[in-house]
Length: 177
Image (cartoon, rainbow, N blue to C red):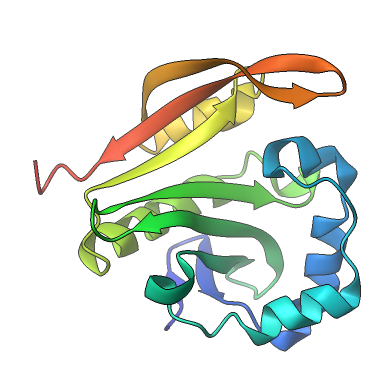
């Protein structure tokens, strides 16, 4: 897959040299709540994961891309998951690793690049995102990217003994509707 390029960032396939970044990000317990992670990842497991990132999205039903600044600094990840070619939809998730890189438009442009790729090249009809109700920054980001709130999953996520609501957002490919 060629890199998807915007004005601020480009998206590219994961490479073996991304191991340290993945290790850092996957073991950041502050984001485990949104990723569903329950335990740390070893470098050995992440090496195996990287070795399989070449597999086709139609086979493994997911795609993870690096978000890189135009100065070639890897700053985050954007994921497609639950890829469903029959119903032409997929879930999307995004994380910008460091606070200093948040709020600068990188995530918004990454979402726009991924949406265009999904709608034009994967022929998807819709993308969706599950966002914790309290995650106002992500809610704002996805709204700016054209996602619409379509429902609330009450007491959906158990985190530190407390059930939290998760909001479902969708972006429908308007060129297909």
